[in-house]
Image (cartoon, rainbow, N blue to C red; front, side, top):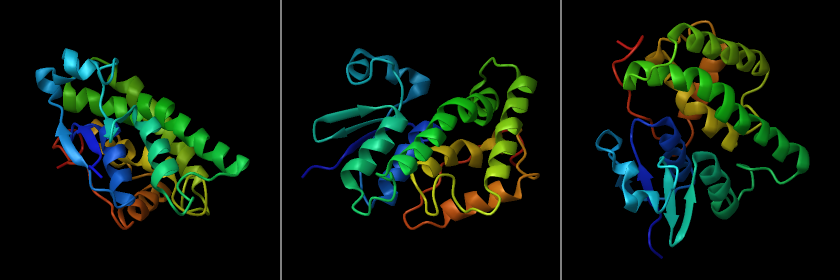
Length: 207
């Protein structure tokens, strides 16, 4: 069987989610670098596999899956023999979906957007964006009181979806100093077998 292809940009947190999930499942993808700086994601060839012109995309032997959240669901459904990364019971599945929505909403509009400003020069309002980031971090900090992971008593794709942009929030001038539960959660993710980091930049609070 051919390797899964991962269309990937290393500094994209969305792309890192897919890379991390593949590694946690002990899958070794063929990496296809998509040079966003040169507009590779807007070529007709790339738009043919993702009309939105975004990374990541995976090609699993002809099955094309775009969008990081969809990729996490697909990989868990197809390759997780334990059934833990995406619980099948209604309440467990709903709790994971809740945090996938937070990753696509509040985390994307806070920590991810703050990093877009400093790393990629995006034109969002820094103060508003940093305020949004701290608002969601405060909710997550409280949620993690007495628990180790976001959606269950073990890691799920909710944790994978939340990890990348929160771990790299300091690059967007969002300090994690006031959030010990969040920092402990990040460390637990980083301690999982198969963890792979996303490259860090020297932007923001990173020294």
